Structures are given as structure tokens and as C-alpha cells.
Image (cartoon, rainbow, N blue to C red):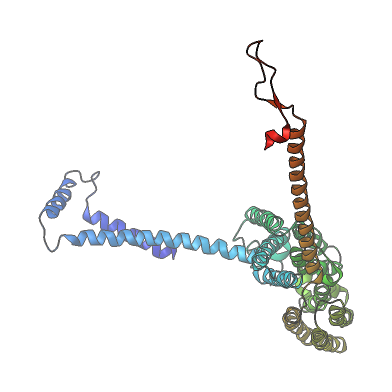
Length: 430
């Protein structure tokens, strides 16, 4: 693209040099083409418009090359921002947050509020993922699957990435605070700090980073619930718990498959001290077993209907079978099978939660209580207005009774006139 733009510019310059002589090097011949051009413009001919069309074509080519350069710059930085944000991972975070918002809603789902919540969550997730890569430039450069990222490959500077992360994270948190509530914004900010400043450095210190990362992944559905219901209750923990336990077998399989790569990058994973893979496989199986009763909890706590408990049990049993095969035969093949099974597990689980959900009773109670409070306040206001009106009427009546009698002649203009005749208040009012 750049080569084509330079060729177009050189062609335009060559055409311009052929049409008009250089007045610096050829001053005597510089006026001739101009005069002939004026004469040609005054006298119509069939061949006169040809130079004008050629110049216009050359200028259009130069302009189009400039447009292509701007589009290339925008495409370059847009691609870098998408890679820094880990768009697919951020999309998964947004999906879990949106599911939490739907589960925390009542009979009516606020679509505008859902869009605001998903947008703010996406921005905060993009900021956290970018900061993670800013802090891990040297580590990513040593790993095959991450060395082509924008920062290790030098396609964007660390300062530029840090400024992008800061601005996007602050804007996303402010959006949640303004359009959702302070609880949702606080959860988003705390998750960003936990991911970028606790989980990221812990990856190079201790294998417990996997469990901390699972907490990070469990917060977005809680954020969505808080944005919809303005509170966190017991039944709001079903989807976060499912995501927490799901991430451990999912990531254990990935860490086993990529343990050489993680070792080259300097990350401390459980699979390093587990050459046979047995310990990693048992951790996966144990957390799959923890997920088995979650469908029953969702039904007993009034989050979903009884159908979800049956469907969730079947889904979890399938994932558990994959983890059991990994325990019995800890090989890359079984680990890859369990990893793919974990990818297939999460979408139907969240779809079942949304399909069989029951409206959030606490949210409905809050709305009912709010309406009752509004009614009480409105009734109190009416009573206050009636009381104030009655006071005004009483005050008028009191003034009418307490004022002195009215006389037709209050002051005698002359001393020999008769005494003024006073009228009773009732007669005066009539």
C-alpha cells in the first residue's frame, strides 16, 4: 500500500514537470505554457481538457494514497487495541456479566441498563487485560503463543498501552457508577485491581495464582446482578460459584498442555511440580464434583425452575467424565479433550440459567416496597397540604373574629358630628 502511494506521488510530480517548466531552472520558458494554457482556455478546442483531466487524476491518486495511509494507521491501532484487550476473553466476561444482570432482574429487564452494564464491563475488562500485558512484556516475549502480541513485537509502545488502559478503565468505571450504581462500579474497580495488581505479579511467585484468577472470573456475574438488583443476595452466588469451579479444570488442562511454554515464560504453575499430571488431574476432578449440586441450589434458592437442576446435573456429569478420563490417563490427549469439553460446557449452562430463571423476588419486593413508600409519602404530602389548608382557613376565620368593629365613620371630621355608629361583624360580613 505504501509503495503504491509513493508511485502515485512520483507519477503526479512527473506529469506536473511535463506540463509546466520549472521557473527556477528555465525562466525563459516558464511563461510560454502558462500563456498557451490561457489561450487554450479562451478558445475552445477538442484537445484542451486533456491536461486538466490528467492533473485531476494524478491529484485524486495522491489523495487516495493519503486516505489509504490514514486507514492503515487506524487499522493498525485498532488491531493493537483489540489484541491488548483480549477481545474474546473480554467478550466472555461481558457475557457472564450480562447473564448476571438478567438473573438479577425482575419481571421486566431494563435493556438500556443491560447495555450500559455490558459496555462498562467490556471497558474495564479491556483495561485489566491491557495492564496485564504491560506488566508481562518480557515474559510474553519468551513464550511462543504470546511473542506476537503488540507489546513484545513492538507494534505499540508500553506508554501508549498504559495510557489506553488507564483511560478505558476509568471511563468504564465511571459509566457503571453513573448508569448502574456504586456497588457495580466498586466491584468492577476491585476486579481490575485484583487482576492487574495481584493476580498478574502472583503468576511469577506461586501456583496459588490460579485460584486468585478464578476469583477474578467469578466477579463479573456478581457485578451484573448488583447492577440490576442494587444488592447481592444468596441466590446471586450460583453463577459466580459455577464460574469459579469451572475455571479450575479449564485452566488446569491448559496449564498441563502449555507447561513448557509457561516454564519458559517464568510463570509458576501447579503443573511444574507435577511431571506425571496426576495432581493436576485430581484438582480438575475435585472442582467438577463441586459443581454437581449447583443446579439443585439454584432451584432451592428460587433462582430457576426444577428443569435447570436436571439439565445442569447432566452438563456437569459430562464435564466430570472428561476430568475422570484425565485422572485415569493424564496425557496431552485427555487434557485437550477436557479443555474442549470445558469450552462447550459454559454456554449451555448460562443459557439454561436464563431460560429457566425465575424473576428476582427480592428485586420485585424492592420495587413493591418502593411503590409503597412512594404511596405513603404521597399520602403524607396530601395530609400535609390538607392540614396547611385547614390552618389557612382557621387563620382567616380568626382574623375575621378578632378584628375591631367596622364603622361607617371611623373618624369624625368635625367635633359637632354625632358619635359613629358601629356595625356588628356578622352584619359586615353579610
